[in-house]
Image 1 (spheres, rainbow, N blue to C red):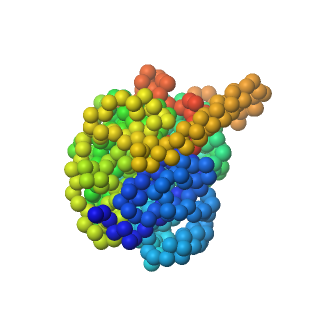
Image 2: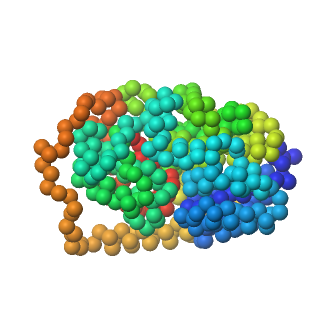
Length: 459
């Protein structure tokens, strides 16, 4: 017998267009296996998700950039078709922000965690996250918000090179613009030129000190904060492989106990009064050992199924249990369990996994999405290779807007940076790990589809 109330359906909402979002498939399977009726409001044209046997019905999503009124109208139409209240689960930042603000308008058709409506937007905004961390005493990369292009160039003196550039609200970056939510910057010129695209990006540019990657330095935390603020389900995990390397989504992750990461996550939840699912990314400083928060995602992360305990509880099921007023059991974490996204790490999917493993796409009880993924992925890679070849063909070089600025014209650093928190320019651990500056598609041109999960690591 299912622990979940299978009379209450679930609606997964994703506004971002991404056919390879395996987190959506994970949520479909998690709830569907428990007997819950699952509806998906997302653009899954050509996506493996649509062929899962656990999907009850697909519904057209709001358009990217839809107004709050449009989002409410779409969700009300879905609610009318279902005919009874459903648990609503946003699967991307834009959806989480919209549903947080529209909670009252969406009731009584949908069940959502009760928390301040602006909180998901606050933690997802990279500029506001720095203030959140300062208030909660959680380490965060040194962050500057330049007022103009000259300030952006000058920041390279203050922070050192390389540094990390982020758009404050990455969900506003227009698809097809060639802009990435996060970029590793290697020169003052790159920072200057990136700032000039602020209007196009739709939100301010942030520049952050960079903490280089290293063995066992990348960590993440998934959890569910229930109605009392207690963090349940989930736990800390170690990122063994990212795609793109050192800067992207988790290709191989392992559930690994880490009291420091657990404590930081619980501290944030308590300080903010946060309720619902959260996905946090950390990087450990190699010299100080401190864990710096890089991102706070107010939704399930794509790899949330890593944190499935021995009773089958994960953060999505915990959400459904709590919102339907059922007890959320204290599970037993199977430390060492792995999660592998097999199109990024095919060999890892084949090797032995003593602690257990789940694959992002293949499942013995739901084979069709895995088969569909490989067919779609092959066509996707072929298109990217062709596009990269065309882009790298010799062409006339346009005049650069970068003015002639000798070093003497750039302001000197106002003070010494924290030596433990900054990567030395030319640090050999950086080379080859991150996407080349100015390359919008990553080393093989595959990262455009994963803007929502791009995470360069900084300090």
